Image: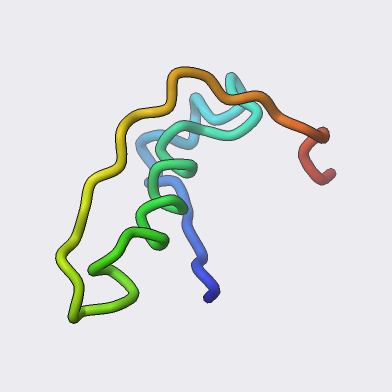
Length: 60
């Protein structure tokens, strides 16, 4: 599966405050939900993560 996500213009000014903007993370994770990829399954909403930790720096 391949998904390309982008921040809306209104959020781009604040993008530098984050390693990975929460809206981008949310958009990318939504592609993994049942019902998004497989239309025969009911869509489920995942619980919100309590904490995330990057394992490597972002690409330059």
